[in-house]
Amino acid sequence: MEARGLTLALGGKTILESVDFTAAPGEVTAIVGPNGAGKTTLLKALSGELKGVGPVRLNGTALTDLRGWQVAEMRGVLPQASALAFPFTVIEVVRIGLSSGRGGGDDRRALQALARVDLAGFAGRYYNDLSGGEQQRVQLARVLTQIWEPMSEGQPRWLLLDEPVASLDVGHQFTVMDIAREFAASGGGVIAVMHDLNLTAMFADKVWVMHRGRVAASGAPRDTLTTDLMQTIYGCPLQVNTVPPLGIPFVLPQTRVS
Amino acid sequence: MTGLLRSGGDLPLDRRILARRMTVVLILVLGILAVASAAIGATGTSLWGALADLAAGRELATSERVILFDIRLPRTLMCMTVGAALAVAGAILQGLFRNPLADPGIVGVSAGASLGAITAIVLGGLLPATVLAWAGPSLVALSAFLGAWLLTLLLYRVSTRNGQTSVATMLLAGVAFTALAMALSGVMVFMANDSQLRDLTFWNMGSLAGATWGKLQVTGPVILLALGAAMLLARGLNALAMGEAVAAHLGIPVQRTKGAAILCTAVLTGTAVAVSGGIGFIGIIVPHLLRLATGPDHHGLLPNCALFGAALLLFADIIARVIVSPAELPIGIVTALMGTPVFLWILLRRHAAMGL
Image (cartoon, rainbow over all chains, first blue to last red; front, side):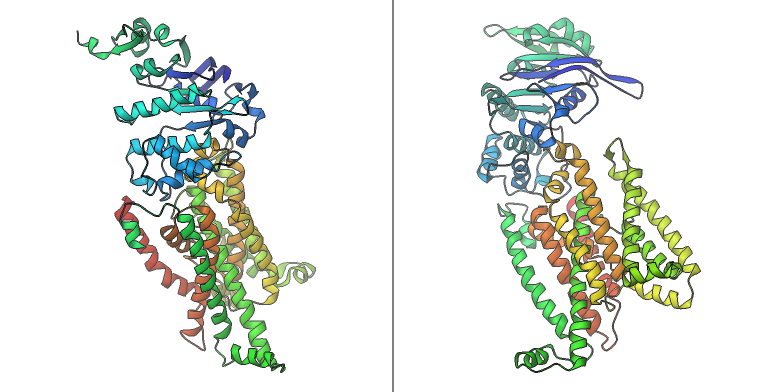
């Protein structure tokens, strides 16, 4: 997945300014940054939802050269929140993922996907009756049924996640991030917009730090999540440390107090 | 069914099975109502007597043949096609607008069709004789379809920017276009003479009494074709229920789906309004009840809407013919009397359940 020179201005305000972005299959790539840095916009450009921002290539082919169903076969997108107009049940929502792309897969896959997001037994419930975090996981199950195998005909598939853990409890944050890790470990690519720097440090292979529509840094967590950079872009005192044996950085907001 | 929905717990895992059972039930009900519709009428003519005569190889009396095959049968078939058209048009619009209360009447499609029909009734006589001879009895239908289509195209133009249709703009523009179409219709009514006014009044109340094989030949195939096309929209409408962005992520050609949905609605509404005038509530009540019973999946919902719509309008027509026999009530009054309580009940239920 690669993008070159993405630029977008809305109403005189620059949202993205010549952003070059790459993500490799087999890795979890995280996009972090303060509110309004352009993270979600970047993800929308990568998913093809936002057109005319700049060239985006999916497995070497320009998105504009692919038909909608061809793109849908190669990548799934988890949006931040999805409201439903009609009283669909959980299993009916997940099944909508089955029908995308070239189709295929049966109801067993939908039930498997629900079990994977820890919602086994929720199949017959109304989607609109669930909590925000549960709805988010139902949507993830729907996206997973869409691109069940991380590899398709030798090509990696892509999981694009917009704040996938935003409304989840800590246990289910791990459930979801484990799914992302496994997907990448099996050869697929994962691109996730993240707010939680600690989860990012634990699960991401590469981090892209966005600030004011530009890429402020990119690379491994330990090279990008640095005290100086974090303090600059978030505009508050933050101390980044590392867990000794693994070298994973962690951020303690409590340092602000001292 | 109510118990199932109220429980808030587990629904049957696969409501598609429910939808399929519903299809079977609806086909049976529709068959019974179709026979009843052909058997019941103001004259004493008996369908069974005629069938017995036919089976015995006897010739039918002319009056029997005319009443059964030239009056009752086309009316029965017209009821079925118009009912199916109205119900499916409602279901498609609701899917398109992601709003279970949307209706061809609300976005102005019906108003456009009415304007077309009224224009044909009032100004039709001014057309050259050759055109009149060619269009004949289908002039009102053609004109109503053109009205619905033009209005829908205008609506689409106004509410679409950079290839994105805004549902809010479309609904508000629909209000404006409805007002405009009604104002222009008012001008037409003002210009009409006494006999045209009489035609307009009866057309406006809605009636299927004027169904003939000639009208059916024009509208039947158009409605059937549009119904067939509508069935192909199921997958797209399901995905659209989660929003346009999600539908696009799922590989649905969103703009094309919306365009097709709009065209289907215009054809179905325009044709139905032309032959039957103002028959309300079918398009809002049929999809609602079916969603409550078997869920919102459009794969089962759309065909069931066609069957249920056809059955409900047949039922309303039988009531309209029987209740003040030998005279008959305009069918629009019957559907409104049946529909309004159900509509209010739906509103109150939704209010309790979702705070709408």
